[in-house]
Length: 137
Image (cartoon, rainbow, N blue to C red; front, side):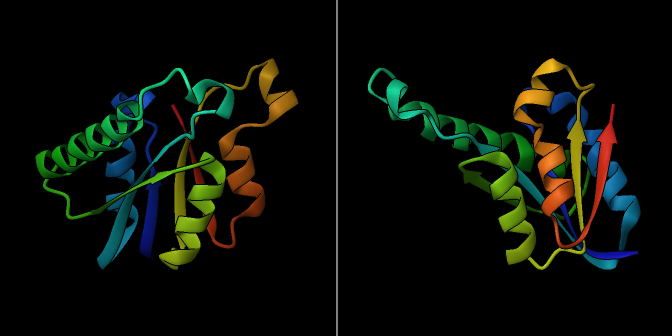
C-alpha cells in the first residue's frame, strides 16, 4: 500500500511502539521502507544552564539503542532517525525529506491542555503533505 512510512515514536510511551511498528509493517508495500523517528525535544533556554549537555546526548543514544533493538527483536528492517527540536516540525520535515507517503503518529486521549497548546498529532495532521494515520491506543 505505502512505499515509505514514517513511524513517529515517543520514547515516553515506548510500550506502544511495537504495536505501531506492526501496523506500519502491515501497511508497507513489498520492498517498502519504514523510517522509525524519535524526536528529542530541545531544552528551553531558561533551563539549559542547569541541565548538563550529556542529558540530550544520552537521550539520543538511548533512543537509538532501544529503537534499533526493538526493530531487531521484531525482525523488522527499518531506518532509525533521531532528531532534536519541536516534535511536530521534526516529523513534518522528516516526512518531506524522506518523501514519505504515510506518517503514523500515536495520540493520547486529549485533555484541556490540548485546547490551549495543541497536540503534536494535531499539528502533523493539519500540515502534512502526505497521508497521516493517528494511532489511538
